[in-house]
Length: 87
Image: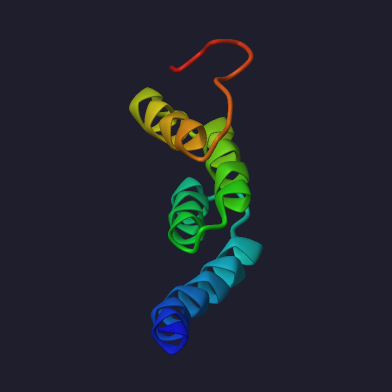
């Protein structure tokens, strides 16, 4: 079973490496940060995912997207924004 888990994680790890490379080129891209958060969440890296979702939420100007990202922060064990602002 251990081999199956390693096999299942490999595509996510490759995707993560590619996503990180793109973020190095475009560090303020909300979509890239959000996607990296989703990849990390799938890998069980909730703390990293939470940080990426928070960063994306800070950058977005779209209220709906901000709420979705903050909901993902909460799902990763984060806390609501200090300002109470979801939009």
